[in-house]
Image (tube, rainbow, N blue to C red):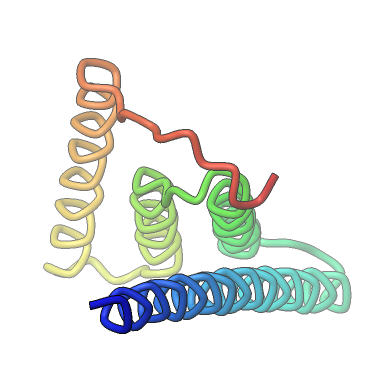
Length: 147
């Protein structure tokens, strides 16, 4: 009986150690991936900015592209600080990308109607997200993973 208790105690200790190592590895990968995504966003934004500087001007689609990079960077920053994905920012990025398509698209065809309808749908979704988050705020656990 005493041997069985020792085996169970050893098993619990081994499981706790494995859980701690697993959590450490997941957190490390999480931080590494966030830094990589952030670096790619900065790299892409700098490249786009240098391209605009080389042209000597920035057109509306170029400025909208910089806003997309700004929103993506803010999204990574918020996720890094809070460990929560700001879903509304994805909607904002999608709206900005679709508006950029509308600005670039010069032909009067059904595509303009579809893209405009998608922008309207995403704007309604953003409104619903804002309303829902004010009426039903998220319950946050006390997480001190990155502090």
